[in-house]
Image (cartoon, rainbow, N blue to C red; front, side, top):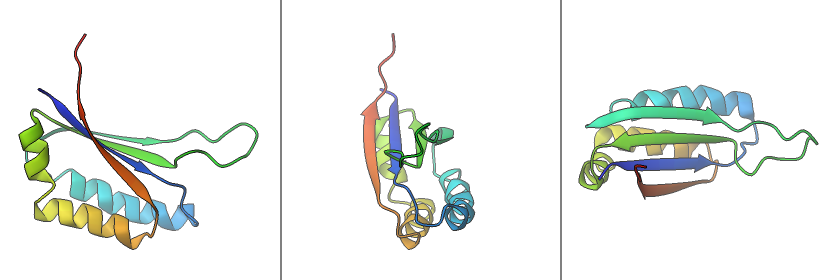
Length: 101
């Protein structure tokens, strides 16, 4: 079954600095083996100006759970997660089974 890895990235202290690192993260993610699609999103700011529940999401799509699991053990994943860790921004990662209608 199709699998998606979702990274939910918290609000950074310095958004401009984070965006520079994020470009590197996307480039590393694009090199993951058997990646079918990459979807990057920025969370809309709240209208009342309060902090959003997350800053960005990064969705990585694979044909199978095994493909996704293998991809996160590669040098490209080490680059992705290494850069993310250096930003000192908290994040969560989810593996999801994509349900088809």
